[in-house]
Every structure is written in C-alpha cells, then in structure tokens.
Length: 458
Image (cartoon, rainbow, N blue to C red; front, side):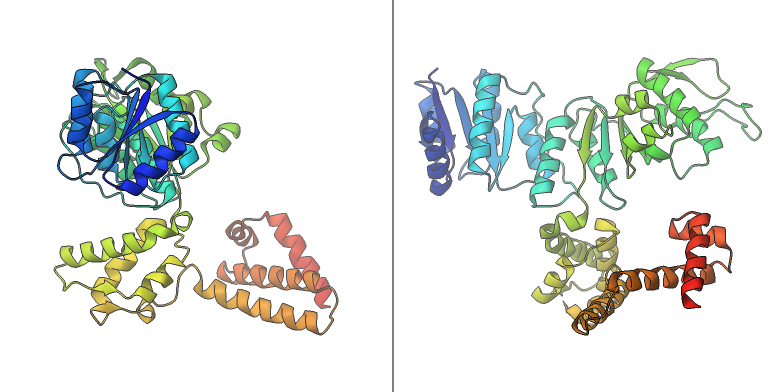
C-alpha cells in the first residue's frame, strides 16, 4: 500500500480538475480511465484511497467496488452524475465510504477525501445486487443530499424521522429506505396516525383480542405484527395522542407489547420510519409531544425540501408525471412546450410534488393538443388571486407615492384589516369567534380591530 489517491474516471476533464485540487492539497494522485487499468495497477500496489466513477466504458465502477471490498482493499469514494436513490444506495451497499454527486464542489471533494483517509474505514453494509426503481426523482442539490442520506442510512436498522411539508413525498422516502434495506423481502406497512380516530388507533397499532371492546368479535392483528421483520411507516406522527405516545415509547424501548385486551406478550422486530409536517421540537416545548419519544424516533432525520426550494427539478418531475399519467390512463402521449416548463418552474406549488402530479394528470386528459402550451396551465392556484391583488396594491402604492400622499403604510394596513375582517365575518355568518379562528387571530383582537375600523370610518 502507498499514500497515493487513485482517481478512476473516463472523463478526462473530471480527472484533471479533481487531481489538480488534490495535488494542491498536498496529496499524491494517480489517474486511470478504465476499470481494467485500475485492476492492472492493483497487481503491483494498493492506493491509500480510490475515487471512482460509477459508469465507465466496459465494467461498472460498482463492480470494481465490490471486488475491492471482497479483497479488503479500500476505502473507496464513488462519484456519479446519476444521483438517484438506487445508484446512491447501491454504492453504499457495495462498500463505498462516501458518495460525491457530480458536479461537485472541489473544496467539498478534497474535504471528503481527507475525512475518509482519516477515518480509514469502509461501510460494513452487506453487498447486494438488487437495484430498486424508485419514484423519488430530482437532480437539484437538496435532493442529491436526500438521496445521499437514504443511501447511507437504508442499510442500517436505525429509526428515521422524515420531515417536510404536505405533498413533498415523505412516504416515498420511507419506501426507499425499506427497499434498499435488508428488510426489503418483508412487509412495508404504512399507517396515517392522523386519519384514525384516537379511540381506534391503539387497536390499529397493536391489534386486539376477541371481546376486548364492543364489536370486537375476533382477534385482529395490528400494524406492528403485520410489519414483523419489515418496516412500519407512521405518517403524521405529530398528531398522535399523548396517551398512545406513552405506549408506543414502551414498545420502542422494549420491543414488546400486548394486544388490546390481551395477556400474551408479543415480541416484535420492526424498523420504524416516522414522518410529520409539523415542528416536533415546538410540540415538545408546548407539551403536545413527548420528548423521550421524539428522541427514539429522531435517530436520523431526513428533511425533504419543498418544491419551491428545488425549482430546478420541476421540469424533470413534470415530464415524468405527464408520461406516467398518459401510460396509466391509456392516453396518447403529450409533451410540454419549453415555455410551459419555464412557467411551471415559476409556480410556488403550495401542495408540492403532489400538486404538480395532479396538475400533470389533469393536463394529460384535458389539454387539447399533443404539445401543452402555457395557456393550457390556467391560473396558478398559488399566484392567481394573490397576484391580482398584490399587483393592484403595488399600482396603488406607486401612484400614492408619486402624488406625495401621507400615511401610506397606515392606510394600506387599515384597508387590509377591514377587507379581511369583513370577508371572514361574511363567510361565517357574522360569528366573530369562528371568523377570528379562520383568520388565525383571537376574538378580542378581531373585536378591537372592528371597533377601530368603524371609529375611523365615522
């Protein structure tokens, strides 16, 4: 073994810039353009670390990675422009110490090489040849980090907390974690804890015996038993009642439970992936969520970005959803015009990926031509009405400023308060408490603002 860093990549440009950065950092570097060239060099010496591309002419970099792991040679860093979940997870399963997504920041790449050299260890995850196909898509930097985390964590049995706004794809992350784990051949069981009435949720999770309560005529197994050996996905965990949080904590701590109304102690081997769109730290602070349960669930956190934070992925996702909808609904394929993709990328999509998917399904059915034009999109739900009134407000403000009018900010706020209050009262039949709740203000605040507005209008 020597102290050289070996770089294997058929792209000469990538090899050149990475080798130059590593040499500038004081490291010795040797370059290769094929897997066979690396094998030939290995007959004479071994590197301190190998950085290899995934896809090269001839054999795959992952094949080489598995060979090196079997021979105890490493560590190895994998780099690739293909930043999907399957590729990333396959690299970690095959023994990669880390993963660099192209294009990468050179400073980050040098720091990764130094860290891996210092660690001197490879991943202990077992090699698998199965590569799953995942619905998670994205090429943006935030999604590359998500894929990297999934790939690194999937092979472990650590509990994972997936956070993100509604519609970002939290269940897809949970399924990817399951499919890339050693539990892939066992069950993946999902339960939305917010969709089950609190009085039934305990039975849904743990099952019940015959006669445990009115209507319980036979024994029913719960989600924990159904997921034995596999993965249990608990969606919207932040809405779980406190009493049930206590029982869930006991199961996570001891790995055993009783069915409702039962006396038989049941042991379980289940990996938990939980998800929430809420701020669990805030719920813990307000006493709505147990801190000890949060710590049990939040061993590894994967934060999914909102779609507006990864706009670069919108064209890719849109084309994928449009093609999938046409295939599923047995419709002629359609395509987005370039201007339409640009318009889509400018939308906010408060419903995130789910909203974009629904829009594409609708366009697959109702768009009149084979090419979808910007006019086919219609008004954006996130910017249509809001855009109209904000544009009108801007026009009014610019004119008022040009005319030298005074107290512009005060007048605008008064008008905004008055319109919101009157609209909320009209929508709720004059009921002040309901109107205040709809606006997110207290009843006293609404009453005070109404009084002040009427006083000014006199």
